[in-house]
Length: 101
Image (cartoon, rainbow, N blue to C red; front, side, top):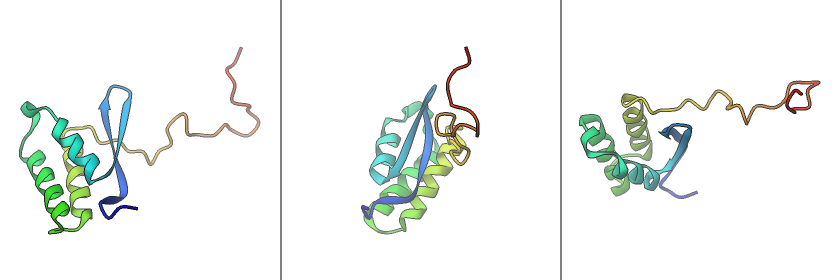
């Protein structure tokens, strides 16, 4: 594991039906750099600054991860993956998982 990898990833909705995993500083930088400039604000700047400071070793990686998650929450793209996604949930006992005819 890289020293720049988050302890736990942040999942964000990158587009309709597309969830993106942000697992390290590089992923966070890529996502933030691609974020539309007209939608950037104070919370965006705070997340970007926290990532830069973590990259330099000025703050712990957890600070950058939490700042990025806070940004994602503020723009309503943070995804809660603690609940199983449909394709990850196993079939119930007695079911074969097929489609009903």
